[in-house]
Length: 430
Length: 154
Picture 1 (cartoon, rainbow over the protein chains, first blue to last red):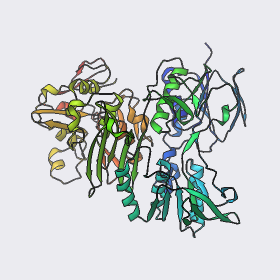
Picture 2: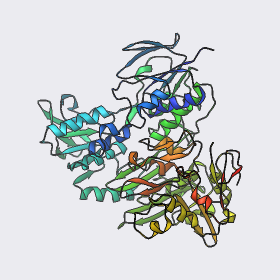
Picture 3: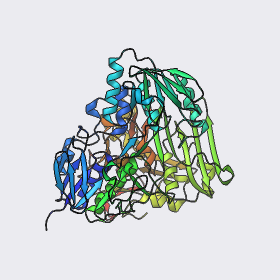
Picture 4: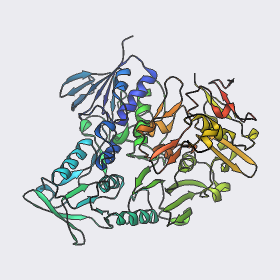
């Protein structure tokens, strides 16, 4: 039988996991991976460590060169994909045309650039924070322009905070401007945000909430100042735009591939064309809450890429959906937060809380109809995974509610059958 | 050859010898007295011991087949050893992003907040070949089995 030909577009975690998925089933098929970046492999979330100087460029990879070699992958770097002919199954790239039997789209996300007045006049001083290329430019700018005194970050979500972490590691004063009334608004509540904010303030980082940038002032193309919605002016040498990402669907724009916000896939990660799959930040899939959405997090991209690969190679594996979860360490405080943590209609939920302002310990668990739906853990995070597991498995926690935020909480508190179920692992009876 | 440690909680007496021998096995000298007399930095055990009144229970990494910690690791520090199937951890690669902690439904990853590294995680005693906790459990509350669930003795 002729070997199958697989093409993977994108060499970040979704694409790399797709390689692993394919090779679980098909050891001989030809795999070609295309990336428009020049680095053989790097982990995007690590760019903040690179910015802070705690990791060097050669420490950013999450797979080594041997990985591509032993999986017999042809890696095309610096190769932008231009067009796909789905009828003839051909991918057109800058460096030639490639035929395929199966295609995986793992093109990730793109930073959202809001249309702020005056942004078009700025040639120097505005940055995004997603790819290694972005952070290299930023680093160079900071190091070259010794005059960089102030940095403004637009957006206090995950990317903005990670960038802040990196800059604070270099002792650069910051202003974070966030539209919501708290930091990390998707998974933090007011208290968690407050604890982190107080720490940030100690470190010369100002936080402005319920506000946004309305106008950008520059002189001869060089950024000078930003003006907020309430008229406040902030002198700034650098503006980092971190308001969010959207799926990078450029390559399939105007083709027969079905998309909404992202490329629409079924539970096998298959698009509406049966030999084309997608996964990671570019795709929209049915998630834990039964709605179709794009959740741009590493564990989802990793899982989806692998599942797509398995299915492309003839295996059968379903994606079961995830919820938003973040693990981010801020100013030395590790935080894990997930799901619904700030419900609008509080009456329908039960909320367990434990706060120790001194030690910066905070735990919150949100329960609806005896099932956990979200939580926040500051500092004391070691057993957060158990709570997330209970959430994912929709375990009824009615009888163990009291112990959930107990300091000693652990597996022994869990309902016996659930404990045995998770402890046993595949193929073992307890 | 995937081996797993099977937990029989009903046999656990709560003696915590599993922890002591785990620490010793992962120390530099592998000498119980030197390890505990403080002449060298004492490693942290890869076992989570839990106890409520008279019920006790020792658990270590299950080396899951579909390991979420490996999938979620941002650096590649957490990986699967192809030969034994064990989930292992390269400390020098770890940066303490705690993604593994977030996704482990068993909560068996211990962390070192100061050094920003995963502090300890069961490695099935890959070096010596037979888990020290299993070997030294006096009541066979933890035993080693192969993929078919058949018991393996040293």
